[in-house]
Length: 76
Image (cartoon, rainbow, N blue to C red; front, top):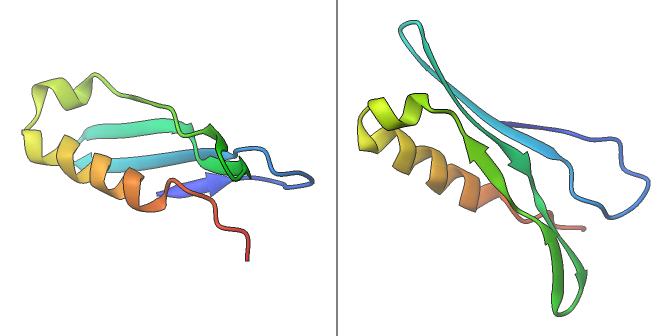
C-alpha cells in the first residue's frame, strides 16, 4: 500500500493497494480521507480491479480491511 502526495493544503492524496498472486495483479485505487472541519471530511472513495471478482473473497476482504485502517489522514 502506498500514497503519492505533495501537500501544500489539506486535500486528499492518491492511495493504492497493490497485491499479487502468481501473475495476477489486484489493486484498490482511490484517495485517502482528510478531515476538513469537525463535521466535514473529503475523500475516501476507491475502485477495485475486476480481478477481485474471480479470486477468493479473502483477498478482497483483506484489501478492504487495510484500506479502512489507513484511510484517514492524521495531521500531527
